[in-house]
Image (tube, rainbow, N blue to C red):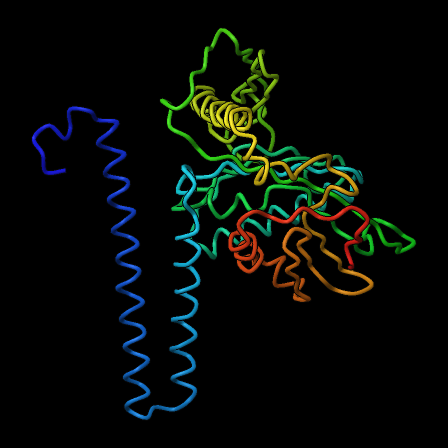
Length: 331
């Protein structure tokens, strides 16, 4: 980096700077952990109360767990921002409501982790909830952590929309792609059909008056993206191009490397038999990941964003387990 010709290749220089900054962050984390361990040792030597020592150790353990997960995130785009999609599946109004609950759950998780979220497209349900939502998640390792959530999520509960108070099963899918640099994928605009429409939702003088929302359809692949979060058509178009490039990159990577299926081959149809995680509210309370076997009875905590243990179990497991045929969710 101190060489005179370092900036001759700006793209190469930026990659080296990113790598250097990543190493600095890891070294800083190691130094921080060292200080916290030393502080705990001092408390013990000074004969502090067990409560004070336990509290200090708990803080150190939490930071160590976070650092351990960051070390596990070594894929090329794990450090990138994430584009997060939720789609309601089989179940009509029930699934739309479930998709909305999931949106809130992930927003809470991102808030706790220090990630910023921006809803860039949302389709409201006919009666309740949402049909789909696209969220831009910004922060270090956003994609690395959230990629663990890609798949079908199943909910079992007493339906609030059923006057007979029967149990219903609902499904919603999560899809996550990394935000990528423009140079990493080529997009020919002559292959893209661009449609404009009026944005939905509340607020803003232009909403429902001008066609500021953008929908892009990529002819060769059939990939469709849309954006309506910005106030101007130009801004929405720029963001839609970014979304489309990210989806094209993901598709290219899937085609190049069959090994990517170990991470992304789990989504399948948004229906029974393809879920990666089950959330049971009644007759008992349990959230169980069917890939790792990790489970908890703290349903409310999970719905408030406590997903760290599930993501941690998936990352530490390396290659996620495929659920065996004929094994029920309760086994």
